[in-house]
Image 1 (cartoon, rainbow, N blue to C red):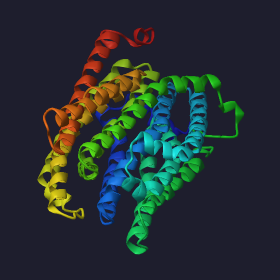
Image 2 (cartoon, rainbow, N blue to C red; image 1 turned 90 degrees about the vertical axis):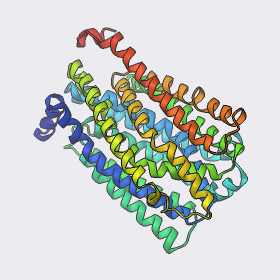
Image 3 (cartoon, rainbow, N blue to C red; image 1 turned 90 degrees about the horizontal axis):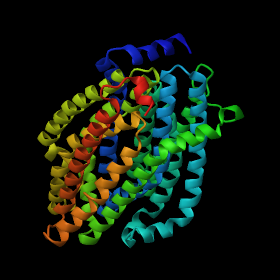
Image 4 (cartoon, one colour; image 1 turned 180 degrees about the vertical axis):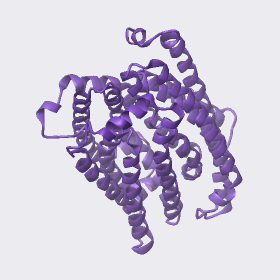
Length: 462
């Protein structure tokens, strides 16, 4: 390990907890803010096409999230293992895990693309995708499926860099990617007047840039966790099994939750119409300002915890949870205040065909903005449990969030209370509050059962 890497590792393991979080989170914060601005501008550009295209983007992006759950789950679970060995200074084993993780991600990505694209008609049938959405966004969806393969590989690389606490590098790489995506989206939509498919192509180009850069930087000899896809010694069946075991609950959790959101969107269209999905998506785009800030803090929580567990410092690991919780609460209150004060200005940025669409987005936004605090706290709790390798918690929480607090609630509000489209926003808020409370409860139970009055050895003897 280079002296600079060793110094950075020691800072993560012994430095002031508050300062460590800020140093790790700040580059991610800047990136997320740029990302928020881009997504906002992207939505504004797409809203200039037509209302169906807006609905198609948010609808098919949710299906894309179902597919990407495989790669994302593996990346999160595997990076926790990398961080633990990196914190313990077992660099050779950390490198072996990183290489196995990358090869596993590439394999899964290829399989997903090869399986999903030919079965697209079946997916439309299962999800009850309407003909207008298929016509507007069918090819856009195909391009997005290909992008998920690249995103899975990129998420692994980003996860490995987070395991080392090297978030500045991630920031620069992603900022360039966002700029590339914005340039191509603007070129395709405003200069060449091309359709929705080319918004997906812009995403594909930007993700391809990250993947090529990732392979270049990760293969450098100066990288302590150097990736070599052609080195057989770095592929371990046992490590692959460990990665799958820790990642499987995350994969299942994200898959079921994302698939459930597709069902939720389908029901919303069935009960009302596709404009509800457009309104919910646009409101979420505006409200994502708050989520981007809280995510900046929670994004590296699991890796930091796992590093300190690898260094046999249980109390310090849990101290990160407390400080992260406090920061997220403060950031959430700040972002909620900013969004409420500027809601009319932000919503008016979109191109609305009529005043009813504006009113519907504003209604959805009302429920979206208050979910920032509950979702932020919930993610802190799940980040804590994932860092302690209790990844099954994500599965339990998201199953309850969807099948107990979301789908049934929407049905009850529509069927028995006869609410209009507002029921969709109300349901989202109710499910997010419930998600937060369940996540807090699981952390409390986990803490008193496994950590309270225990030292490091006691914890790992469980």
